[in-house]
Length: 323
Image (cartoon, rainbow, N blue to C red; front, side, top):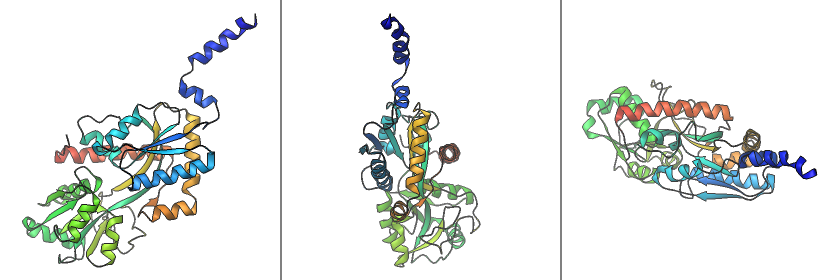
């Protein structure tokens, strides 16, 4: 008789998915993996490791960073997209998350359906710079100079489809500049090229150019942010110098696979908000040239929708394709 009474309970448990079962137990009860779709050492990796360390301290469960680089981040993002949605796999992303679905003919994930946003932890604007030998002191002067004789100029970027590359293309299309983009294999080579005057102008992420601007080798002309960077407060925004709609940055965000229980997502979001408010975390992320954003899941979801549409238009208009 007792066995018969237990049958409905057993059937109900069997009907629950692994994700639903995870929500019914104390989370987390085992180690968590953060997939970083880039090599170690970059900002996405650094932020993931900082968050992982703090989650380990708070919850007493080991958080392991798993670097799965390749294909502009698609390998790691594709791996996370098919992971069990139980809260034990987290994906750390940069802005390529919003760019790749248009840039690649076959991205292994849907930016709206494959994941649930947790937070955009931090972001850094892109910046337009010129070598000190270029006779300009402002963005307006640069554009006037290029329009006068565009054949003498080209602009270095960190690579095809990166947000600095797309920022350069957006500006080129907006003000109708006859200037060629020169994509390098990363921010380091692009910054080295403009600092060495191999290219006279560049659009890159902000952190690696700061020492060159401070040393006088480069001139910071404008940042693609809504407000000035605290790292370079004397460099105006693009809107301040008359070019609205050019806002762009490089983000460091975190997501979980779609289907992750709401209770787990809520717990992750609350804990990450707490972590990002800690002074030592804010200081260490600022050292990377990034500023804390700490958006809510809803705010991050809205940002993803906006940036997928924005960069999709630029990519299609410029006919940029990686594969």
